[in-house]
Image (tube, rainbow, N blue to C red):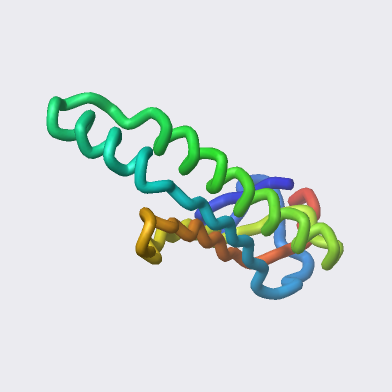
Length: 110
């Protein structure tokens, strides 16, 4: 599934707009991971555990959105937007990764 942040696709024309599609993924971090990440942040290290979890959540959200577009018969998604929301929590953070875009069908330009 082709996914773009732009509203157009070079070499293609949009033949049908199927509508808005979305995908979401939640990741939770426990208090121990939060504490150790905080220590690493203080001493200047990178928190690779969080980076891996964010990347995984982003891929899950994009995959979910692509599946929704495929169910509508689309072959591309334009205007893709990714948003990250910290939902908080008592034992750590919960982060929501949301994706939105417009599912479209395309044809080659002549």
